[in-house]
Each structure stands twice: as C-alpha cells, then as structure tokens.
Image (cartoon, rainbow, N blue to C red; front, side, top):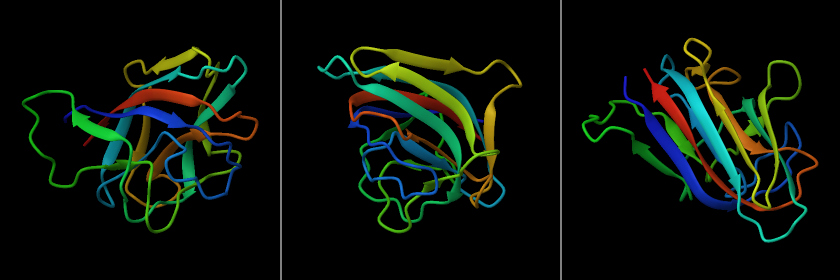
Length: 170
C-alpha cells in the first residue's frame, strides 16, 4: 500500500455531458486500475478556483466511466508518491487528463455520479476527505467499476481551477 497524489496545477474546465468524450486537458484526471484485479481507493479530492472573472460556476463530478480511456498521452497532471520511500509499483494505476486513443466517458445517472463539487472558479474551493472505510474505490480496469473521472458537468462555465486527488492502489 502506497498513497499517491495526482495533481493538476491549472486547467481550464469545459462542460461535458454524460456519455460524451471528455475533452483532453479540460478535465481534472482519470484514475484507472493498472491491472484487471487492482483495487484503488480514493482518499481525498481538493479543488480550488484560479479565475479572474467573478462568475464562473464549477460543477465537478467524480464519476464512474461508461467508456474507459486507452493510451495515455502527454498529460498536464503530475502523479507522485506521498512517501519518499515508496517503491515503484509493478502495475501502477493509470492517471492523467489526455489520452491519444479512446477518450473516457462519464457514466450517466445511477451508479455513475459519486461526488459533486460545486464552487466558483473565482477563488472558491471544495474538498472531500474520506473517513476510514468510506473511501470511493475502483476495481480493475474495465467499465464501469475500473475507472473514475473527475470532470466538469453540464452547466459549468469555463474557468481555471487546480487541485489534487489522493489515492491508494493495492
């Protein structure tokens, strides 16, 4: 067990409807199991607004995906081990916000949307911290239980945000 953080220093969000391709670089991150049996727990999500405009509502969803991403591209996220003594994983989880192959798609409705973060990109912030045994998890690397995405939902006004997700692959 080795806690890791995927961070995104600054992205400009794009409102994306369920079951539509997520726009490369305009969503926070995808987390996908590194193998067909790997379990990954999400422990914390932190989002903060960075925009200069006063009215840029953000509706950010942590959701399961109906279409899983394929072939990680040149991403604007950074994935780091939380402990300096963490050994490299044999099968690391796949994280990022740019895919050169199949694009991820958020699962619609029941079973898809897990957490909703609503705030203004003009300096607003939102944070979720899991209590013990109440983590959000994924298992494997196939839809719908093997991938989570953190992305802006319909109604979001494009705005600059940054943040991170703390997760733990097993």
